[in-house]
Length: 252
Image (cartoon, rainbow, N blue to C red; front, side, top):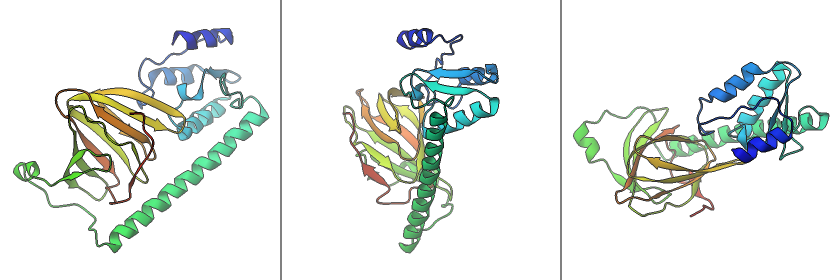
């Protein structure tokens, strides 16, 4: 943070906004304060684009909000990202087209995945409600990342599963083709690596921590305590079946 502040001061920034929470959080009060502070003609300067946005889509949304205010955006590390110039505006326009194409591809892959599941006679829609005793004996399978998974109920829009990674174990690094997930950790402790577009981070995970895994995110996790690392994950839409996850290069 000190080095970034020094870079911004050297660039003669008049006011510096510093977020004190992880950039993966949806509620980012300093970003909202910045946007509220801006006036037409102001220029937002960042050391790197990944210090401002979580993904390409997030960057484009923020750039559009700045455009409506009448403000510009400039990155010190990426000279091409300068909306005060014609070339910079053209680059972001190209990025917007790529992001729109990617959304279309994801929608098409989702549709094909559902059609393939229907061809295998996979039943969609709400499942019968299970009792607590039945849930405790739900079928355990091995996930593509190597963790043990206990399948829980699912609805037409989402599914739920209980993940467990043995003490000292490291999962395979994987990514999802069509779904996104929300994880809530129940016990144990460890670390989670995530990379999406140009943003990459390793976060500590333990009981009470919740994280998101957007579609296309490369991720890997490890259990660093004497007890299993356990989490409940919500999948949206429901897990389509084999082939949804694919292996990628991890960091462990």
